[in-house]
Length: 409
Image 1 (cartoon, rainbow, N blue to C red):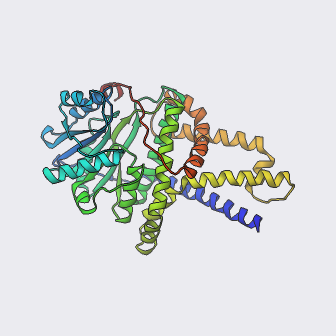
Image 2: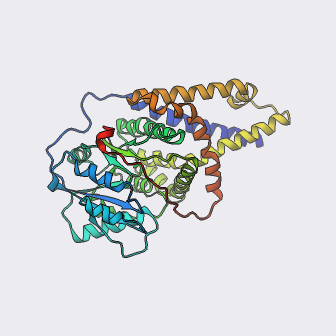
Image 3: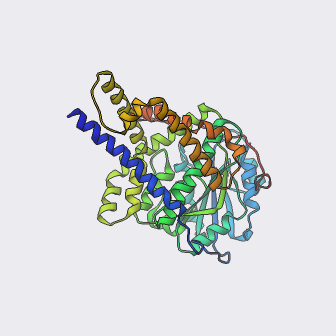
């Protein structure tokens, strides 16, 4: 019986990996015509920036937004300061942003965004859509133009391309850059090519006023971005991936910063699975919405990694007891050093492939190429911690990388 359970878990983990490998291959599917055509600028945007003590970087973001290749009378910039003790407000106003003061207690980005959405839709119903950024971002000049094109194409929700401001600052920021480039190409682009739904990646995304009025923005987890993506899936609202609407994001540079951020991500992903497992499964099967089941599998990632670790522990135990197993992991265990080398080399090859496909410079992320496997393995203790944690409070990550958009593009 124990062997049977082992083999069932074994097969589930393997099939999970095969699923994402196969769907990822659709990133190579090329279309003869552009998915999102170009239109004349006509949509009016409200740009939202939730900020908590971001005085060092928010000026650069607003400056890049003021340099958009888009009519200035068709967008406004709003900053939502929350729990600020520095001069974020003064700097934002100096650069021309409008301020939305929250008169309620704010403990998460999701709450700040909901307050802003409700406030603007209630008092200023002139916007066709909202674009959301983090204060540490800088934005490509064509971002709003391409998001307007996306609206004209009929999409109500869209995720832009999440790039990195500081890929070469440390091995951590280098690994983050590789992680996002991989997600852009093998997850979001692949699903765009499949005709499914991309996911929202936390910043650089667009929501139409229409979809907000219909469905609202009601998120309760630590990861409001993927939670809203789950809500979109349940409502059969397809999320577009707009590769040339680029946001440059500041990545953590130390392992402690990364630990805090990824702990929030893992906790939020687990919360989303608990809250949306039944709705996603029901909608996916009953209404034949593939992105529902796709999103459900995405939420399972932390648990699958833990299951993989449990399999390894059982495998080691069985071998110590001289109990025979017959699967791929047993072969890998017998030739463990060869398997370890192969795994490491494959990780390097995948990283290099992503860098080449995304037209990036290997010299900027060479440290990450050799350490990405360590970065991904380090997610295991984070997932185990989050599995048993009952409460998590948002922990700020300081941003101080100041760059003008001209120095990046």
